[in-house]
Image (cartoon, rainbow, N blue to C red):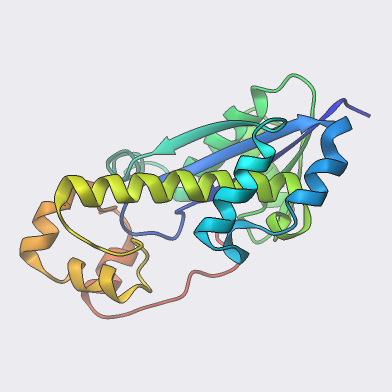
Length: 216
């Protein structure tokens, strides 16, 4: 048994506006019970205030490594790579930064074996991955909370910089859709839009699809 545990999750994968944030959380195994007591829910089940409160409680014994991928960088990378590969490469790099730890990742592929092949391609072999790991493993929930709070702060920074309130940046958000369909506002936030993604075209054509639970 290793002396530490780690979890990896992301925020902003399904967004059409703003960055994708991938986070690794890790702590000593001796702190696991304390983490389990405090971090019982993933970021989606908490309000912004609750996420901040949980993070404040665990920061003293949980360490975080955060990687932000801007919309511009995603657009550039997607000329040659899938979003799954882009995300998996970052997750693998974060995982490899730990010498010895039991790593659990929130699974993004439909199947664990396809995700494992993807991760091994980028050099990470020792890990576990499950769907909804952020709901079942507090250390993954911690990564989820940190990623979400980090992304939310970046989104607010973009709004302040552009003067455009585009909501959450997700295609299901009416504010986001309204801005994407407004040529003047779209021009102001141009560099923060993920352009090489069919989701943007779907919004423009008023075709909306929920992001599937299994993303391939």
